[in-house]
Image 1 (tube, rainbow, N blue to C red):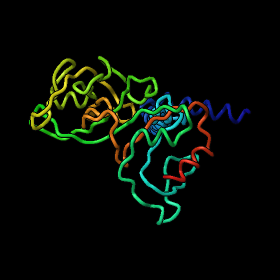
Image 2: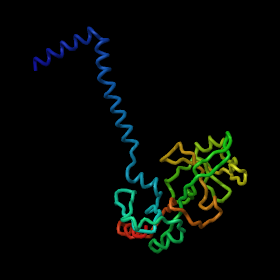
Image 3: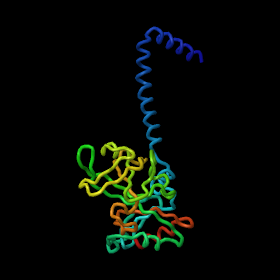
Image 4: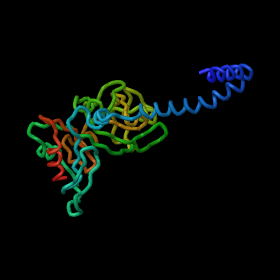
Length: 245
């Protein structure tokens, strides 16, 4: 113990004698440690929990469903990716109706479509392509997928909501008008939203079917449905659906 006390007295005396050098040594040691700590904290806070990821993917639903193939697919219960069981089952499905999806689910299930695409609009500097999303985010089943900022969800085919990035590019505000690039159509902007998974994304949100004028459209392979089932969506039920793609 006496040796430690002597060493500490010497160190304190040297630190007082050369304060500038001592502060430099502390900074050289402390700054990298501080940087690594801040980086680790930022990384941890950016990682979604399984519950948060599920909420952004399927709102309050029991499942999110796509139907891209007419054959069997295989899926892991811890991942959303899938693959064909063999090449003969890899027939691409051209389109699917909501009625077909409901028919494949347990009796009493309810679904809402979530359709993504691209459309050409007039912007503040001319015309341009923006992402579109046909989703009734005002439905409780879609709660958590998009974050409402101002206004409300579209209720008709002549209304839209915009992300903040899209509103800036278009040069329009809540209550303004959005025009198709060719001038053939226009929509009233009734809401501003944010996609928590892509806050800088330029997206225009419509009611499902608003772009093609069909309230019950046949949807392409990239479309998805948010599913609410009367009971729990079990893994055996998922595997049964995977048998038909």
